[in-house]
Image (cartoon, rainbow, N blue to C red; front, side, top):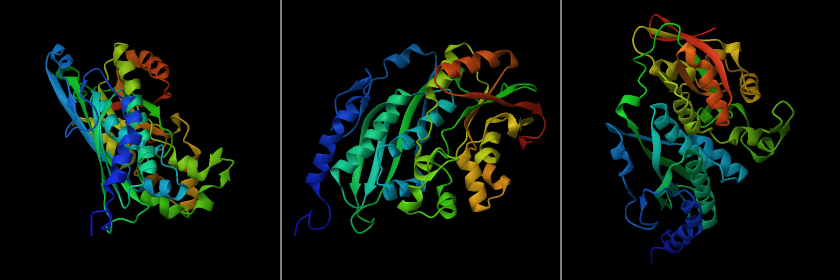
Amino acid sequence: MDYKNSGVDIEAGYKSVELMKKHVQETMRAEVLGGLGGFSGAFSLAKIKEMENPVLLSGTDGCGTKVKLAFIMDKHDTIGIDAVAMCVNDVACAGGEPLFFLDYIACGKNYPEKIATIVSGVAEGCKQSGCALIGGETAEHPGLMPEDEYDLAGFAVGVVDEKDIITGKELKDGDVLIGLASTGVHSNGFSLVRKIFTMDKETLDTYHEELGTTLGEALLAPTRIYVKALKNIKDAGVRVKACSHITGGGFYENIPRMLPEGKHAVIEKNSYPIPPIFTMMAREGQVEEQMMYNTYNMGLGMIIAVDPADVDRAMEAAKAAGDTPYVVGKITDGEKGVTLC
């Protein structure tokens, strides 16, 4: 008896590392010390010393049950972008710059090519957000997980000068809310998605005119990364007063998180186009509007608050980053919370 007979293939692990090295290398920053394969990732903090009062930010998350679609479609090259996006968007939401990322893949059986494909997506997410992939772990769990399945999670560390942290404390009546368009469902609410639609390859491979693509491709579209947009807005001299990453819990849970006591957010639902995937989900699943806005991003992956005088500069900076911004509402005095009208 040996370890391989128990279900863990050490040689497959070695092959996975070799196959993913080229993807990892593409994410390197000057601050990364050493290479892939050490017991820990090393990252120089020399540049951080230039800040007045540097503060480290961190975020950890996964892709939830969205991975089930990747299994069915046998498409694993974008799910890693989702894992990175969920973490770095949270860091950017506080005004920070993501520095480095680590991933964790748990699988029933290590298929090196599949693992390398997953990591290629992680590397792509890191490149989009400007952070380095400095380490990770692939754990084989025979008997605990089916051989063809895996779970993916990650952890990001970023930095911000304390004076630049986005807290919401400066919000005032009349400040303007700008929403940045999402790419679709992103990585939240897939347990409900899987109840609405039949989860088989035939259904997911079916083309829908209203979507302009297959159902599976629309649902598996990777989460938008907003790091560059927020950096561009900051570099344009705009002070983002508050910021909300619209993830699980949708509008009703996440928007109040950006508000201090005594401030209320008003969102105009008709101020931007709702992607057709959400219209289809609501119709096919007979999901009430309140539940849709309480579960999904409904087309806005990030919402920021700025002074009215800064709206045009913020919009242009977001567009320059490749994002699509909309003026979607305003801040008023009142009980902490959000109204959709």
